Amino acid sequence: MNMNLTVVILAAGLGKRMKSETPKVLHKALGKPMLQHVIDAVRTLKPSKTIVVIGNGAEQVREQIDDSRLTFVLQKKLLGTGDALSVAKKEIKKGTVLVVNGDCPLIRAQTLKNLLTKHRRQNHMLSFLSFVDNTMPGYGRIFRDDNGRVTGIVEDKHATSDEKNKFNELNGGVYVMETEALDFLSMIKKNRSSGEYYLTDIIGIISKTGKGIEAYECPSEEIRGVNSRKELYEISNILNKRTISNLMTKGVTFIEPNTTLVHVSVSIGKDTIIYPNTYFEGNTSIGRNCTIYPGARICDSAIGNEVTVKDNSLIVESMIKDRASIGPCAHVRPSSVIGLDAKIGNFVEVKKANIGKGTKVSHLTYLGDARIGPGVNIGAGTITCNYDGRNKYETVIESGVFIGSDSQLIAPVTIGKNAFVAAGSTITDNVPSGALAISRTKQKNIENWNKRKKISKGNRKKL
Image 1 (cartoon, one colour):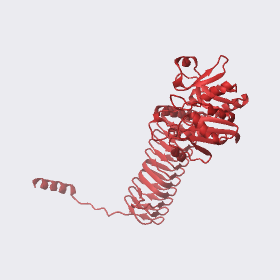
Image 2: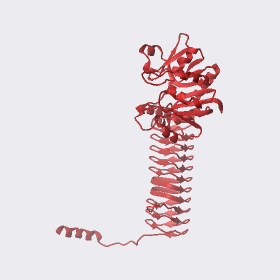
Image 3: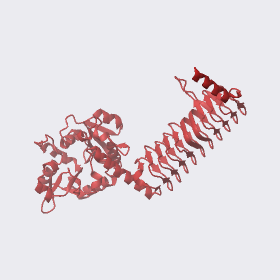
C-alpha cells in the first residue's frame, strides 16, 4: 500500500448535457460506470485512501458504487472543482494527493504511475497532465512564460482569441500535489460569470510563490471527459477497440472487429475465433479454441475450451463446458450448466437446467428447472412443464434416457435410467429405469372421411 498517497475523485457534476436522470458518472462506458473505470485505474496505485466527492444523485452513486474501501464526501452545493477539493480536504491524509475526474474512463493506470514518479522525482509541490490536440475544445489553456515555466491556466470559455492562438497546451485535469498545496485552496476566488471556484486557479496562485510546478504531456485520448451521449459513445468505442486490440495480441482472432463488442471485464483464450456482429458482456470468460459465430451474445457466463456457439444464440449467466455446441438460435437462460460434449440445437431454450455429458437437445425444445444426466437424447418439441401458475417444480431425467418428439414432462417427475418415452406422450408420473412410457390414445382411422366431408359441405351450401 502507498501509505503517503490519497486519491480524490471528483464525481459531483450535474452532467446537464447528458439529458438524463442518471448521474453522469454512472453512465456506462462499455458496460461499466465511468466512475468505476476511474476507481479501477487508481486502485492499481494502492493508495492508503480513496475519496469520492459526490453531489448530483449522491445516493444513486453510493448505491451503485457499493465499495467499503471508498470514502464518500458530499458536496452540498455544486460550486466547482476548487470547492469540491476543499470539501474533501478534511478527509485527506498528509502526504501526496492525486486528483482525478470521475468522468474520464480512458485514463490508464500506467499514465497515473508515470505522473506520480515524475512528480516525486522532481520534488514539485504540484504536477498535472497536459496534452496538445486542436480537435478537442473546452479544455483550459496552460500559460507558460518565456522560460517555459507554467504560470497559470485559463478555462477555455474565459480565454481570449489571442490566448487561444498563443497557447495550445491544454489542461488534462489530473493533478498530483503535496498536502501543503491544499492551503492555497482558500485563496481561490469565485468566478464572476459562473459563480464557481475553479481548481485550475490554484496553478497561478502557487506559481507566484515560486514553488515547484510542472505539466507533463500525455496522450489526449486518455484524459477525454464525457459531457454528452455522443462523447459517451466515442469513448466507449475507443475502449472497445483498445480491449479487442489487447485480445488480438494474446492470440484471439476477430474476423471483423468493428462489428464486435467486448466489455473490458471479458477474457478470451487464444486460438478462439470471433465472427462479426457478436457481443461479449459483463463477467464473461471464453476458453481456448472456441468458435463464436455471427449474432451471438454472451453475458456473465463461463465458456469452456473448444466450444462452438452458432449463429444468433443468447447465453446469460450460465456455464458451457468443454466441447459443447450451442445453437443456432438457442437461448441459454440463467443458472444453466451445459455439460461436456453436450449439444443444444436450434430453437432450444434452457433455463436453470443442468445438462449432462454428451446429451443432445437438438431442436425446438424447452427445458426449465431440470436435471438431465449424461447420454440423454431429447426429441424435437419436448417441453418440461415446470410451472403450475404458483410454483415451479423440477424434472429429473437420468442417464441414457430417450425422450421421443413432442413429449410433455409434467413436473415434478423423474425419468429413470435408460427409460424410453414414446413420441407425443404426456408424462405425469415417474418412469422406472428401463421402462417404456407411452401416454396417448389409440390411433383410430375413419374410412372415407374426405368424401363424407365434401358431402357435408355441399349440404351446408344448400341450406
